[in-house]
Length: 324
Image 1 (cartoon, rainbow, N blue to C red):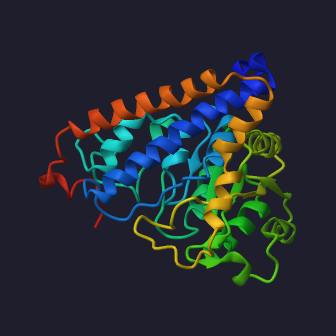
Image 2: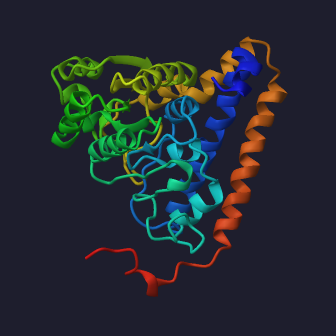
């Protein structure tokens, strides 16, 4: 835990996490509005309902630890410390965006904050993260790499090779599977014979565990333990964080594959509603919890205003930073 978290106590830690989760939730809701109004172009995938995983994981990391996320990575970027204004500006194709408006949602990256980007190829972050971990080893740096991916990615050959490679070389990387129950539009239970995906870790000779991905404190503890193990030179770990998304796989997904009542039931279990219930039961005043939401909303509203007011990216520079 950070010094701030230690001083705050258990209830205070959850309040800090709730504030961070509200920031992500409200950012994603604003992104959805901007995409539906066609102010954001291109494919967009939201992490609504999965906020506890990036919040908990990033709380366990040090400043220089790199994070590689999936294309559902806005929440990871925000949790890693990326300011919301340039993040939204990037999605809007503005010159003030993190990547000058070139990356959009699918290729968002912010190395200045330890966020090394999303990847639109399922599972492709795995080998890249292994490479970053190898670089840390060769530099003698005390860095631990976190690589996040969805449950469907564990059926990709590139990720299998990355997990084996990292295990053989005992690389300092923590692999986090965000299992939301669906591999795009297909239930993961229909894709595999053994749905407990964490059990695959044993085949690679690394520790594996399943955690409650709607509990940021549990995620933080699991990632902190895996990161400590990696820093000690004991190699990689696989964490399967169980969660549910409250929105479609992508914006525009009709979600006809989801049974009636599934999303409503998920709303009872989702991390923000759960944190509010737990804090209320611990005696935290409703006014204090409402204030956290208002602070997050004011921050995201201001960031959206700044981003929308920024100039569009100069299309004459589109060929820059491209290797051909």
